[in-house]
Image (cartoon, rainbow over all chains, first blue to last red; front, side):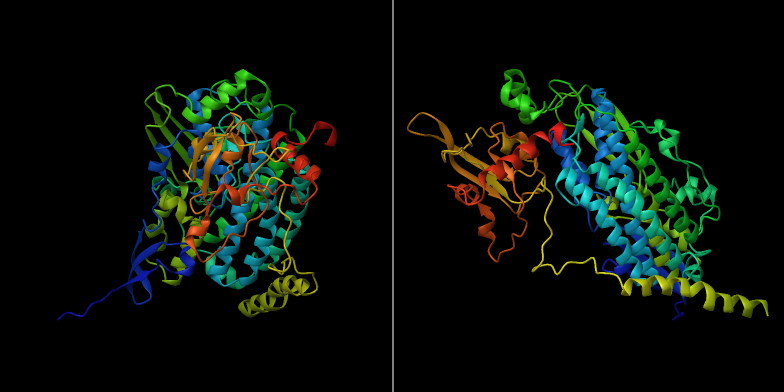
Length: 390
Length: 168
C-alpha cells in the first residue's frame, strides 16, 4: 500500500477564526497547504428568494441581514436599485445623509474587521478597543433608525424619518475621537514585529490576479489597482465629495491592513464634508403612489391617506425592465440586479456580494503557504458569512 | 551585527509602544456597564416591545384596519375585527407573534391611527414558547396611565413627526 503523502483536514465550520460558518478543506503536505477549498452554504437563508416573494419596500429588512456589519450599505444598494428602476429622484438632503451614514458604516465595518483580524493573529486587546469605538457609531444607528444593528433606515425614495436632532453633534464627536484612538491602534500593530511577521508577504495577490479573480474593495486596491466605485461610477451624489482612493503596493495582508486604516480616515473626511454641506429639505421624495407620504398628511389629508393605504397593502407597480446598481460597500462592490415583470414584486433579485467573490480567491491566496497563514488569508479578505451564503 | 541592532530596536523601541497603550488603559475608567444592574437608556426612537395606544378616555385607538398586518414583512400580526355597541370598529383579536417579529417598525410606520408603537423595553426571554404570542391585553397601555401622560405624548409626537424646527 503506497504511503499517503498528503493529509486532508477540515477547518471549520465551527472554527473561531473562520468568522462564521465557513469550512475550508485543506490538503496538507506536512505544514504546507497544497490545496484549500472553501465550502460554503452553512448559513444559506434564501434571502434572494425571500426578497422576490415580498413587495419592494418589504424587502429592505432582508438586505440588513446579509452583511450584518454594514447594514446601511446594504440598504443603500437595494434602495438605489429600486429607485433606478422606478426613476425616482431623491431630495439632496437624503443623498447627503445617506452618504454620511454609509461612510460611518464603512468605519464601523472596518473597525470590526481590524479587531477580529488582530484577534485571529493573537492581538487580543485590539478587539476590545475597536468595539469601544464602534459603539459610538452603533449609537448613531440607534438614534436615527431605532435599532442597533438591523437599522432599516433607508426607504425607497428617502429615509424612514428625519435625522435626529443631535445627529450633527454625535457625528462630529466621532470624527474627532476616532482618529485619536487610531493612533493607539497604530502603536499596537503597525510597528509590532509579531504582527509584521504574521502578515507581511502573506496572502499575496498580484494586481493582475486580483482583476482576474474579479476581486473588489480593499482586496483589489491592496494590490495597487486604483478602482473605487465611488469615483469610477458615482452614485448618491459621491461626485460632490473630495477624497482619495487609498491603495496598497504589495497586495499582502499587511498592505490591506494599512489600506483599511487609510480608508477609515478618508471615510471620516467624507462624513465631515457631508455634515458641513448638509442641505435643508424634506427627508422623502414626493412621488405619490410610490413613496409613503409624511405621517402628518396621512392623518389630515384624504388623498395622502388613500396613497398610504394603497402603498402599504399593494405596493407599487414597477415598470418592466432590468436594473443593476452597484455601490462600494466596505467589503467591495455590492451589486443588486433586479428584474421586473411589471408587477408589484421583483421577478428576480440577484445580489453580487463582495465577500462571496473575494472568498473565491482564497485558494490562490494560501496554496503553497503554511497552514497558519490560512487564518490570516481568511481574516484579510474580510468575509461575512451572512453575505457569502445569503 | 545589523540583525542584532534591528532586534534591539524592536524590543526596546517599537514593541513598548504597544505596551504603553495597554498600560494607559489600566488607569482609564471602564466603558462597560454592569449590565443587569445598570442599564443604558435607549434612544427615543428605539424599537422595542409593542404597545397599543388608547385615547385619553381609555378607548382603544386601534380600529383593526389591518395595515400593520399588511406591512409586516415577517407576517407576525394576526387580527379579527368586531363592532362595538355604538357602531365603532375595533379589534376582537389582536395577536403579535414575538418569535416571528423582527422589530423593523413597519407596523408603527403603517398605522394610520397611531395606535401601535414600539416602546423601549427589550428583554423578552421566557421558558415557554406560548408566552411569546402577545394578545391585545398584553400590549394595551395601562389606563389610567401610571407615568406622566404628557411625557409619553411628547415622545410619541417626536417619534412620528421628528423634532420641531424651533428645538434644533
